[in-house]
Each structure stands twice: as C-alpha cells, then as structure tokens.
Amino acid sequence: MYRKETETFEKYNLSPFAQLSEESKGRQVVEEECDIRTCYQKDRDRIIHSESFRKLKGKTQVYIIKYDSFRTRLTHTLEVSQIARTIARALKLNEDLVEAIALGHDLGHTCFGHSGEEVLNRLTGHFKHNEQSLRVIDVLEREGKGLNLTMEVRDGILNHTGEGIPFTLEGKLVKLIDRVTYLCHDIQDSISAGILRKDDIPRDILEVLGDTHSLRVNTFVHDIIKETKKQLEKEEDIIITQSHVVYEKMSKLREFMFKNVYNGELCTVEKEKATYIVEFLYKYFINYPNLLPELYLKSVNGENLNRVVTDFIAMCTDSYAIKLFQNKVIPFPENINSKM
Figure (cartoon, rainbow, N blue to C red):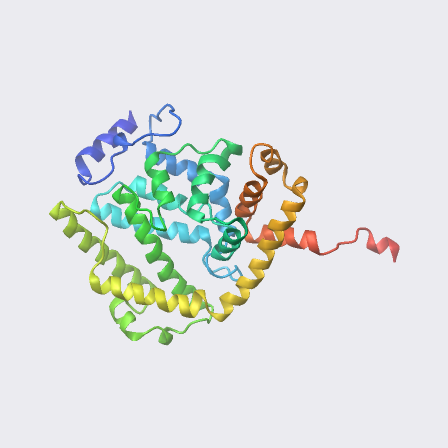
C-alpha cells in the first residue's frame, strides 16, 4: 500500500527524465516486492545492513587512519550520498536510487584504499574496485547469496568510475559527485594534517571554487544544478553537467592534488608500507590456503584460488590486515614468563 503511494508520487512529481521505481528493470532473481518500500529503498537498506558497508569505517580514504578526523571510506560514502541527494532533489531525480548507488559504490574497495587496489591489480593482472563492488553485492554478501539488487543500482555502482557510463541520470550524478566529493574533502584532510597549506593551492582555483571546504561544495552543487537544469529544459542530450569555468578549475585542482597529495611524499611513504602488507598477505594465503577463514576456505572448491584470496584481502579493513600481517610475521612466544 505505502509503496504504491510512493510510486504514484514519483510518477507525478519527479522529472520526466528521472528513473521511476515502478519502471525498474528488476532484479537478477525475481522476488516479492515490499508493501512499504520501493525497490530502490529496499536496495538502500540492504546495503546499509551489509557487512561490507560496516567495514568501510575501517578502510583508508587517502591517509592510513591515524587521526579520528580523517575521512574513511565510510565517511566519504556518506558525503557522496548527501551531496548527490541534495542535487537529485533539486533536479527532481529519484533520490532513493541516487542514495542506493552512492552508499554502495565503494563496497569493493580494499584495505589501504587505492594502494591496496593497485597491488591486487598488479598481482592478479586485473582488479578494479568498482567491479569488486559489483561482485560484493552479487556474490560475496550473505555468505555467497548476494544482495540481489536492482539493475539500476548495480549499473550505477559498476559504472561510478572508469569509462563506463551509467544508463540512468541518477547513476551519472553519483559518478560526478564521487569525484567532486573526494577533491573537496581531501583538501580539508590534507590541510588538517599539515600536508598542505591553503596558500599552496593556486589562487585562481580558490577564486572560482571558494577558499573553504563548505564554499567549494556549495560552488559545485549550485553549478551542477544550474547547468543541468539547462539541459533538462532543452530536453535533448540530457547529461549531468558543469559550467566550463568550474569544470576547468576542478580539472586543474585534480592535477594539483595528484602531484602534491596523492603522489606526494607522505602518501608515497605510507603507500610503500601498505603495498608491502597487501603483497605479503596475498602471497602468504596463495601458499597456505588452508589458513584462510572458514567461509573463504569453503569457496576454494568452487572458485579459483587467486579469486578467493583476492576477495578475502579486498574485504579486510586496514587494522585487520595489519594485525593479520603481524600475526604471520612477528613471533609471540606463549608462556614466556614461566620459562624465565
């Protein structure tokens, strides 16, 4: 009953270019609909209650977590969701679909962020966190049963990065906001950590985007809403877009961040440590698969060993990977006091 009311509301109040819940392409496995929630609300809830979502709080965004104020994959995910939902509401897109895609887009990220991703890609020949996110929701969650999400959410998660383009405007919105969000909050974290000073950022970027975190977010939000509304009014070539000047400064900011932060000295030192740990764990469990946790050990019979070990490491939080490394490398003699 309540679901039908929401679907009717969508039909008469959302943009004609929005993805309606009742017009979803459905799920891989057909299931009974909820009488309260729409299909996208149901997807959102499944993601929030998943083990993979909870683990995001222990995974690196940029800096290996040393301070409580640093972003993690979880806080990044929540910020993407909040900013994307704000814009979706202004554009009358399906806010529930946007939220589900945003909350699930990074579920496949490894421990130690992109450093872990790069190691697994090198060791296996191919590893992309967006593809792993899809594998998490399709295969790994619920002890191998998966979450059985809708096609629109799966598409948005898979194509939130890389060359793939989501087929919904909601997915395209999350794809852009993911980049906007990490650029904004990574500046704030870098300044808080003493890695950057505000004066280090080229003045022409700050003059356009703003010289505080909130001003930069505000600039991006207003610009995307204004420019995209122009496209919606034309009713042709419908895209989520930005003005030329804001896009230009965002691109310049991204180049600056890669040079001075992502590939900077501190990140490089931390990256070397993370790389060593991930590579050690991968090779260790390839050689000793019988020491994998029972759930993953069961999967070895039906999956390639490399695939199972990759899944296991990708699901590790930073702290768990570090403890696992210590456990395998550092001796801890038992009952040492009794022998002294």
